[in-house]
Image 1: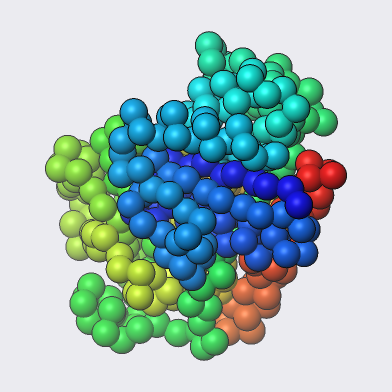
Image 2: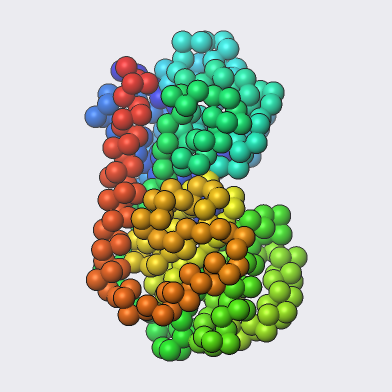
Length: 374
C-alpha cells in the first residue's frame, strides 16, 4: 500500500481561500484513500489542530508556526512516504531536499496564483524542475507557469477549487429580512455585493473600480446599494472613505465587515449581483459560492476568475480596469432584473454544482492521483 504526505501552510486556523482549498483537499484525500489503496498523513506549519469533519486528527500534525520544528520533522517524515504533495510553493525547500535525497519519491506541488505569475528563482525554481506533477488551480495560472517558469505544459494539470462539502446551499432564493434591516436595505433597493479582504497591501480585488462605476450609475439608479464585506485595515478604509466621498456615495456604500460562517449564504442571497473585477485572483472561490446561491456574477478577464465563470458561460467577464464596462454590466442586471428569478437561480446553482461541486472535485483528484500512485 502506497503512502501519501500532504504539507500545507494553513488549513484550519483561518477562513481564507487558501485555507478552504487545503481543507477540501484533505477531505478528498481521506475519502479517496480506501478506493485508491493508499494511506495519508498531513502536516501544517501554522495550524495547531484539525477539524475531523475534514481530516482525522490522528493523521494530522500542526506545528503552530514553529519553522525550526516543521522543516526537519516534515523532511524526515517525507522520506518515509511514497508521494509528497506540497500545498504551496513556499514549501519548496522541503520538496527539493526530499527529492534530492530520494529521487524515486513522487513530488507534486499545488500552485494557486500570483506566487507563480512571475519567474521564481533559487530553491523554488529547482523544486519545480524536480516535481513530477504541478497542479494549477486555473487555466490562467497554468499558462503563467508554462510561460514564466518554463515548465512543459504536459507536466501541469489544471485542478480547480471546489465548493466546500459543508457549504450551506440555499433551497429557497430570497433576501433575509433581518439582514436588510441591519444594513438599511429596502425592498426597492438593488444590491451589488463584494466579499473579499480589504487590504492596503492587496489592492487588486477591483472594489474601487466598482465604487467608481456606481458613481456613474447612481443618478439614474439611486436605489443602488453597494455592500462591501470582509475585514479591512484602517489605511484601506480611509482610502475607500475618501473615494466614496469623491463620488457622493455615502448613502450607497455599506461596509459589512467580517462575515460569520453561519451568515455567508444569507449575505450572498442579499445580493442581486455579486461582483469582483479582480486582477490577481488565482481562481476565486467566492464566485462559485455566489453562483451556488443563485446569484448573478461579474468578474475580471485578466486572472483565474475566468475559470470560475467558465469563460463567460456562467456570468459576465470584462476588462477589470474599464469602469464604463463595469457600470454597463451592473445597469444590464438592473434593467433585466425580472429575468433573474428563482428558476434562473436554481438552474445556475445546479450548473455550478455540476462543474465545481465536491463530487466533481474528488473525481478530478482521483484522475490525477491514479498515475502518480501507480
